[in-house]
Length: 150
Image (cartoon, rainbow, N blue to C red; front, side):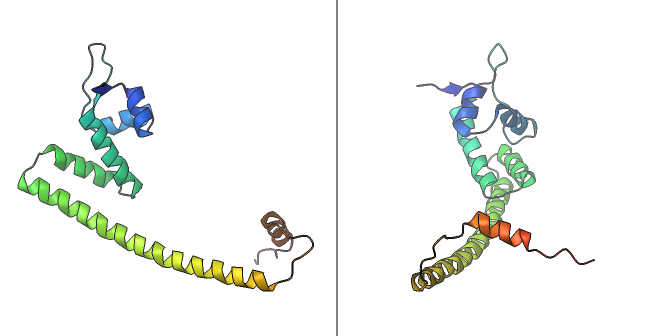
């Protein structure tokens, strides 16, 4: 089993580019990666676990500045202040995510209702000879738009 990965292998494993991995290291999101004698980076398992966590934070919209702060606190180790601040940062972000999810869930309910309404309406309508496509509808709307008021 491989205990370390080259930067190309790490990029492939994470879905990030080599450039992004180097950038993350340069701005302090990733600790300096150990290097071989030929100066090639070798990503360890713990580096890959950390990168996966960073990707989770990034996918939830956590700003890079906050990710950098979290990484900085992580480097301080498990001191009370560091642990408390990391926990608070994650709690605050989690509350934000929960609010976003609630908004999305509410929107999803509306979308399902609209789809059901259109399904019921569709079942009551007689079939047309040549159904319009979305592209034709859009072209028709664009053709009949009024010029902007000045």
